Length: 174
Image (tube, rainbow, N blue to C red; front, side, top):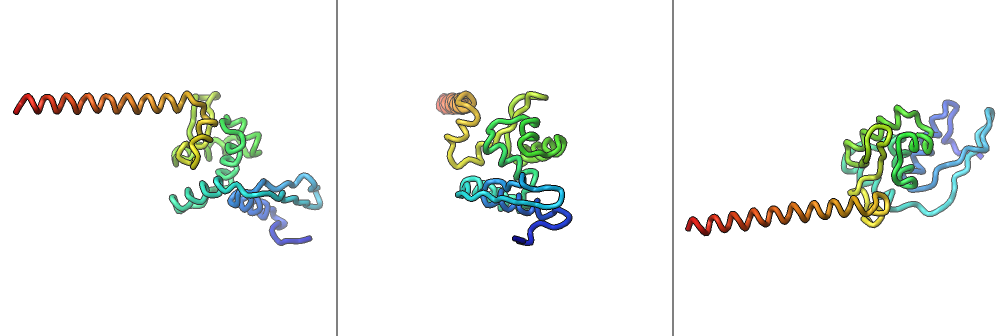
């Protein structure tokens, strides 16, 4: 059956992948294709509403649609949690240079966070992208959250001490 999405130049494949990702669906399967024909299987299933909401909010925030590379990387990280460039490349079948460039753009935009350096650098979806913070903790581990909480408490404690000393100094002056 012809549905008019795939063209001789193959541009329709990108459109099908992009549509599947933007609507929170599973990726299409082309494994039945050959050199002379294309067989496409689009799996049925419920959309990932949280993922769709995250993508929609980001595109509304920036006013710019996410690239197919970015969508594929976010989808891989949704399933793979913490991944290196090599892991993402293997999951998405994108060139390493494309993965690295798109991932760094998403880090700068606040979509992704990193841990480690060099070859040990790993990417995760940013905490502010999660509606449910429990999923973020599952992804990053409890230690990072404990560090953030203790640092916040420490900063609050220092601020409180400063305010008390300031109030005491003002009281001494009057």
